[in-house]
Length: 72
Image 1: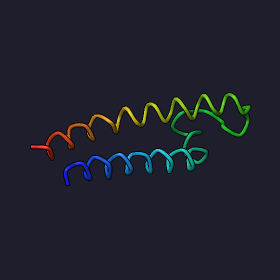
Image 2 (image 1 turned 30 degrees about the horizontal axis):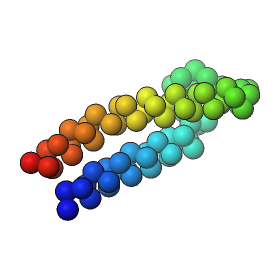
Image 3 (image 1 turned 120 degrees about the horizontal axis):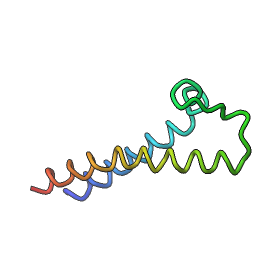
Image 4 (image 1 turned 60 degrees about the horizontal axis):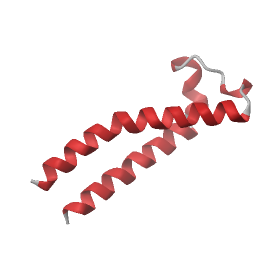
């Protein structure tokens, strides 16, 4: 049963990353100061990959902590 929590939290983190990736043209200009419409495909791949890594690292630590608490 406790493994289900970890899977659910990982799926939740992936869904958040996908939602932020899809909506990034709306907020990237103001937050990151990057105009995504003027970038090439390879630049977009690098930007989206780095954003996914950063978002996953931010969300990954709380998920790790929550799963450790749920295991006890």
